[in-house]
Every structure is written in C-alpha cells, then in structure tokens.
Image (cartoon, rainbow, N blue to C red; front, side, top):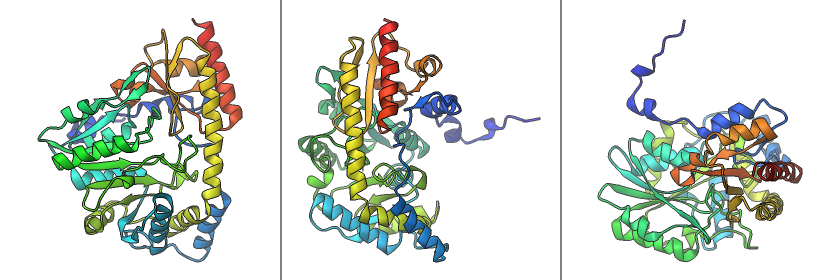
Amino acid sequence: MSIDQTQFLSRIARETPGSQISAVADYGRARSSVIPLWVGEADLPTPRFICDAATRSLAAGETFYTGTRGIPELRQALATYHARLYGGAFSSERFFVTGSGMQSIQVALTLIAGEGDEVIVPTPAWPNFAAAVGVRGARPHVVPLRFGNAGWVLDFDDLAAAINPNTRAIYFNSPCNPTGWTASRDELQHVLDLARRYGLWIVADEVYTRFVYDGTARSPSFHDVAEPGDRILYTNTFSKNWAMTGWRVGWIEADPSLGPSIENLLQYSTSGVAVFMQRGAVAALEQGEGFVEHLIARVKRNRDFVADAFAKSPRIRFSSPTGAFYMYFAIDGEPDTSRLPFRLMDEIGIGLAPGGAFGHAGDGFLRLCFARSADSVDEAVGRLTRWVAETA
C-alpha cells in the first residue's frame, strides 16, 4: 500500500509546476502513428565523428573524475569557436562546462538570485526558466510580448516598468523559444542599457543563435554590444547545433572572476561532466560546422513550407519566425489549447505543444517544432491544415 508523503515535502518541491509539454509527450509517445513535433529537438542522430571521439576516449580509459570546470581542451575549443563566431579574442577562462543547458541556467540563477528576489522574464518563453527561478526561491516577473500585425513585439516601456527594488536580473532568450522572435542589435543595446542603469544582471540564453534565416551566420548577440564589466551570464548547450540532446552537455560563459563561485556550485551538484562526453563536444566544435550548416538549411526549408501552408488558411494566425525552429500559431475558434494537443493526437495523429505552457501570453497558441524530416513535417502540416478546413 502506497502512502502519500507529498505533504511532508518542502514548499518549493510541492509548488514546482509540472511540465505541460511532458504531459503531452507522455500521452503520445507510445503511439507510433503520432508525428511527434512537441519537443525541441531534431530527429537526426548525433553525427558519427562526435560519437567516434567519445568512443576513442572510452577506449583510452578516460573514465575517471576530472576538473569541475571542464577539460582544458574543451574550454579552449569553446574560446576558439566564440572567437570565430563573434570576432575578437576569448579566453578559455571564461568558459565552464556543465551537465546540460538546463544546469547552466540553474547555476546562473543560483549565482545571482535567491529568496525574495525577482527575475524579469519576457514571455512566451521556455517554461523551464521561470520554474528554475521558483526553485531558487525567487519570483519570475513576466513581461508579455504583444502579438499583432507586426508579429511578436517586446514593449521596452513594459520591460522598464517591471523593474523594482527586488529585481536582480533580466532573462533574455533570442532567438526565442517558442515564438521565433529575434532581437535586433539595437534592441539588445536597449536591454543592456536598462541593466546598466539599474545594476541588473542579464542571463543571455543564446541557444538558437545559429538558427537564423537571413543568410547570416548567427543572430545579433549581447557579445556585439557588451563591454568589460557588464553583468552578463551566457548560457548555452550542445543539444541543438550538433544534435546532442541526449548527451546533456552545456556551458556557461562568464567573467573569469566568477570562476571559483561557478566551480563551487558545479562541485556540489554534478562535480563535472564525463571526459568522454567532453571529447565528443570538442569534436563538435572543431569538426561540426558542415553539420550545423546542413541542419540549418534543413529547418529553413521546413520553416518556409509551414509558413506557406499556414498562410493559405484563413483560420491560422502566425508570424513567420526569424529564428529558432518553431512555428507558434493560433487557430481561430480553438481557444482552449491546453486540451487541443490531446485532441489532435487522437483525431489526426500529430503531437504539438500547448502554447500556454510558455506563459499566459501564449494562451490560445500551439507550438510546432519543424526541426524534423521534410516528410514528417509535410505530412503533419497536411493533416493539420485539412483538419482546420474541415472543422471550420
């Protein structure tokens, strides 16, 4: 007989919200007929050259504890990669290897926010960040983006109005999951100016910086406007660019003066990332540019296909994303998008994420991940647009 012991848990454990996206995935995962477009990952396996590097490391017996900050080869590879992508010189001392992008965010938040503090979160946004703020005992202060004829827009007056004496940081994800909104250099400068004026930190989540569709190599970045001394913590992951979601390897970029504090926080959680996984990450950075370009071309094709198909439906409202790899859209006459993903799995066999999972600004929307094969995306969109037409 099982006895419910949840009443004896801490307040934070009791109040941490469940994942609406996981609930949808759990419902549809065992259904082979469902096309799964609910989570943010490509359907390509990790490239062989990355796996081979990890295999060689295992064969060489690299199975022992390692330095908490990451092996020197990976930290240097990260510095070299950033110098190539952003220009200028980067010291390897700025980089700290983590056990996933999620751990990077958790560590960043632990560095700067605690009980009674607030972190500003423009929404719709990846729900794990706001939940991670709550787990730290702090409070997410959401600032909704506005959706209209110009697509998703962040009102900087709203952002400034959200700042109060308890505010410690601004979380900024661009390109944005789920909307695909991408901040311009001027907009990033505006956010940075606000942070400087009020002495705030910025947690810069630039996970999707390579996934832009204007022919450039990356999106605008805080690297383009920051100066030494700015309080910016960059969080990132190997998951998206190199199809390494299951590897759980990420990184933090921060001023080297924060190194001892970051190392302590990593020491008392995972104590470092396995060496063989880090060897794979080195290979990704040093040999993976061709794969990244292939993946971006693949998702750009799918973005264009989805946008063209949705534009033909008078019931579908959307803004074509300029970054990331999601289509965030609403269907007129279907306001309850908390239940709609389950209906769509039952009725037409496609799996989408509920828009409200990304904050109340996303109520009434759905998220479709198009980082999949062209065949599966085309089939899913065909099923959906036919369903939208038939249920009008």
